[in-house]
Length: 119
Image (cartoon, rainbow, N blue to C red; front, side, top):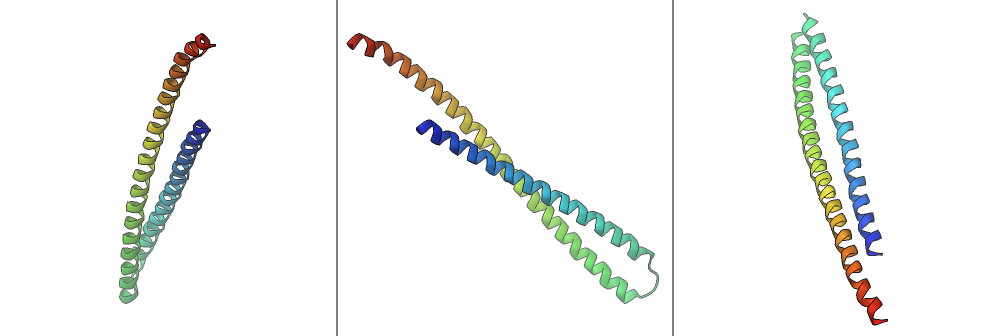
C-alpha cells in the first residue's frame, strides 16, 4: 500500500512537470510568434513616409508590445526553471524510492530466516 502511494506521488510529480513543460513550450511559441509579428509591424512602419503622428503612435504600440514580449519571455524562463527544479526533485524522489525498496527487500530477506527458525 505504501509503495503504491509513493509511486502515485512520483507519477503525479512527473505529470506536473510534463504539464509545466508543455505550458513553457506554448509560452515560448507565443513569444516567438509575437516577436515575429512585432518585427513585421516594425518593418511596415519604417516603410511609411506620411503621417508622423500615426507613425509615432504605432512606434509606441510596438514598444509596449516589445515590453510585453520581454515580460512573457521572463515568465517563460521562470516557468522553465520551475519545471526543471520539479523534474530534478522528481528524479531525486524516484532514486530515494528505489533505494528504500532495496533497503526494504534486504530487511525482509534478513527477517525471513529468523521466521523460519521459529516455526
